[in-house]
Length: 242
Image (spheres, helix red, strand yellow):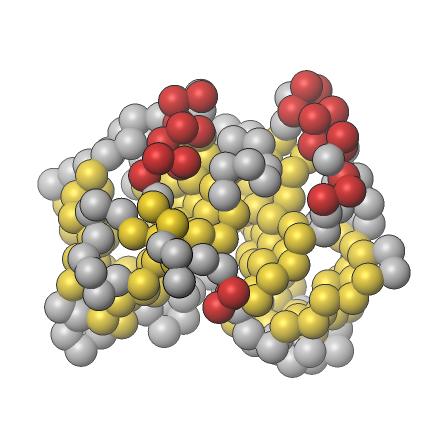
């Protein structure tokens, strides 16, 4: 199990978790206020970006999407786009290398992109391993990007996500700045504070707990290895109608 503190050295892009999950790359773009970062189009690559700190604008083709706090941006594939710091900000980027068939399928749906949404707009879900007071959100469902899903978990101590395993899903967690939690993996406990990214190994028995008065708030990112993993993403998270 590997984890690392995310750099907040503004004006710099840093890659994390190198080689941890096959075909997956993770970056943090730290922009100063009004700084611009051009991200050029990439072939055979699915991309997801999430504002984890501060505010940012995403500009692609003639569209501009502006967010002053947590938000998702999934760019139109094979098209340049730009990030602009509204203020000092940190943007998490995930890149997934695709097969030729996956790439062609994603290109065929280019009209559905970009996707941009504020964090609070995403639907809440429940899951058997979480308590009733936990607030969980489904951010990227299994039908948006190949072999990928993402959501969030938020609660306050004392609370826990009960230990569970998913043998067909690799995971990354990103712990938001305000979060301080304990991740349980097999027989080990890891105290994880804010702005930390970590790898939850495939098929590990894992859970999360938070002790009063601390706050648990993290993104989970699932990378499925087969169709069983994709079905898990769809079945495990039960959307709450509000």
